[in-house]
Length: 132
Image 1 (cartoon, rainbow, N blue to C red):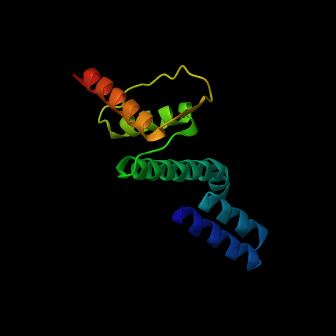
Image 2 (spheres, rainbow, N blue to C red; image 1 turned 60 degrees about the vertical axis):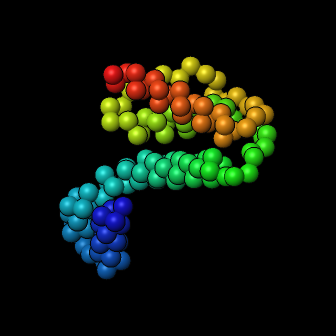
Image 3 (cartoon, rainbow, N blue to C red; image 1 turned 90 degrees about the vertical axis):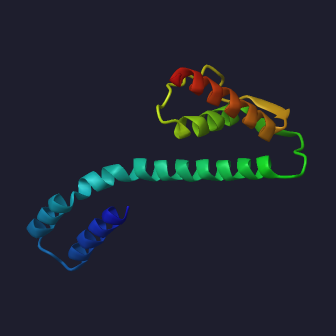
């Protein structure tokens, strides 16, 4: 991102400095501005997805480590399963291939943190078996 930002700033400085069109086009090619522009949407989407994952992980850690008893809540089981599986897969040296066969969304009323921990344990055990 810093490299992209520096390239865009350099290009914009030249454009605002009234560089001649040929020099501006050469700078555009040299700095790969078109490639940067094409990369921006997936980069932003990935960054937002990563931030959402971190938020969910922190929330789950707080819930798991809380000394208070977790209450019942309505939540998306599918999302909880995907988050739990993602935790385990990211921690594995050899990344297992995981195939999901479940609905896009499945709401349930339960203790989310408990279900999350059960799924983490099951997937971790399965990953251990696959490695051995």
